[in-house]
Image (cartoon, rainbow, N blue to C red; front, top):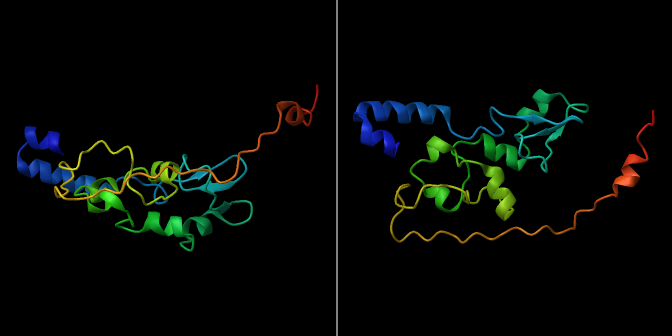
Length: 159
């Protein structure tokens, strides 16, 4: 919008902003879903570690409309329950908090500020005295367990 404001009349910029707000930004859990190869439903293609249910056990419509899951409820809520600089951002209605999975993978909190937002504090309208919470990297509590390929391939049929 900053670029458009420098090149177009204010009424065109206002129209563009209205269209972007109508679109609503990131659509994970709203207009985008992912059903993996075994039937697990995820909020989008990047949330592979978060399972909402399985279409072999419940209809997709029942899983997708179920807001009892806190993540799905938050993704479907407008405005989203964002924290940090995303909560105070003047463009929240345009981007919807951007990629929540990125915040989750970085901090363990899906509502934390998006660590990859390219707008600076002045661009998003934060006051000079705004104190952003420092990013706290998430640490996996249990090690990932890998099975040797030989054990996995032993189950494959031979020709």
